[in-house]
Image (cartoon, rainbow, N blue to C red; front, top):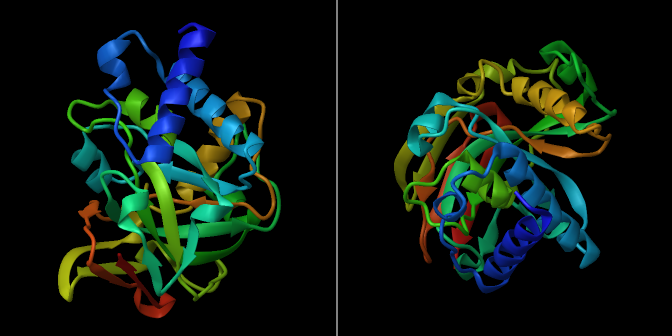
Length: 260
């Protein structure tokens, strides 16, 4: 895909982000677009956001569980970037108008205490580099029409990342069997989704190793202090203005937020 086309699509997505709008599918207009093209679009968009003063604090990994792959029809993981102004604490009121196609996912996030890089990064390497795990809700934000989208569309759109709400309970990987952390997701008092973290590639930190190896292909690495959002182990839950969301992670606490 020509550099000018990549820049044009990144500008369209930046405008959609500002206006909370939706653009036509990239793959409908450019059926020859590749995954490499989509990461190039995301990269131009990311660099524009950083140039405008936003600070990168981490990465999100998406489509790591069968639940999410079946929900989207996309069968391989992807990743995007997270900025400082997208991180909320439990109890937050989230303005629904700041997002498009708003949905919630149940995840674990990891904070790194040391850099992590491929090409042969393993789950054990990832666990050794992780400072702590913390429960998180991801808010999806899709600026590309959902019908018929492919992984190329999703990656271009920063892997549909909008924001996250972090819990308060932190656990080192040696303190808890992370595979068995549960998530019971409720909306307005009614349980909507349940799952356990092993649904993410067998172990939620497996995605961190996958991402380090993926980054190596681009000559990059994950840095100490970064937050890695590891992927959902439930299907996405649609939310609207006025909805109260609660997720119980048992020994890792509860996250609550409200959409206003």
